[in-house]
Length: 142
Image (cartoon, rainbow, N blue to C red; front, side, top):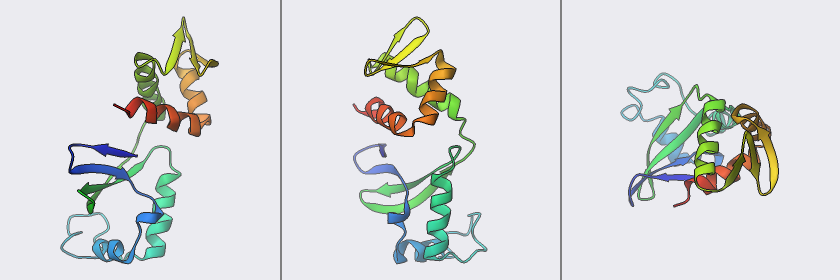
């Protein structure tokens, strides 16, 4: 999912399709990584794919590429994401936009009750990542 700052600069979540020879060469460039936590490691295509899969499967972390137009110019790793708070924020925005309906303490999505209270609704979304991704995408649409 792309997050735009303006029409030229955006973040995009990285996955293994982003791992190319050019990308790995860039990650091994001493000038590029001189302030990075990986400055003393030799990165390979295989090791970077394993790393991205590890981050992708970790609910508390996200890694994004920073792009200028279509050129990949950097990365940002966000750690220690509190999933309950993240989901609660998505739920609140979805309610404001009419994506999720709220009646009393109950939350419903597409006519189905998904939780009573924000914590239980957040738990439901954590256990149903496809629905969470769908709702998050709708929330982020203009």
